[in-house]
Image (cartoon, rainbow, N blue to C red; front, side, top):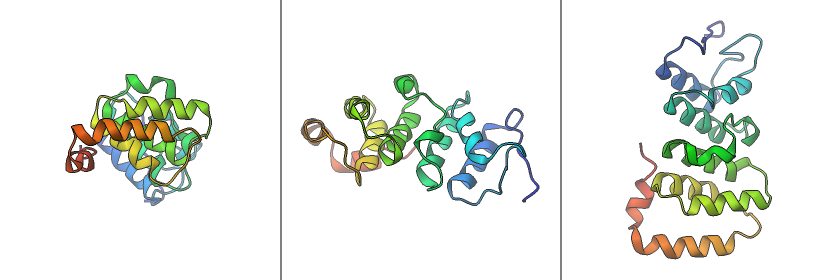
Length: 162
């Protein structure tokens, strides 16, 4: 497997997804996609792939692999509302998990707390579970008040399953 290479231009979305799973769990051989580029560089490139499942798994790999972080995200965060809900969920989690801690981060967190899709909101809440961002308290309190009456806990907990 160490000599196997996956051509990102020709590979199917399913093959790219499986390769990203290997990257995410830290079991991918070095330079799996290209001998001239390390896997983290290709994860960034695959973030802009046309297929939503490839985008989702590139974000997932960033969240799961401790050697990757927010800087490896290949999707500009200011385009988050243009992404499918499954991708937004992992983008929000990556932002909270390893993103910058600044005013703009707080704005994205507030935006995510109002996202119309529960999967995106669940990704944000999952990312926030062990971090602190200045100015987040009012956002969380408003968000909790809005969601606790509309959605039973089971719906929120199971909403990230796709």
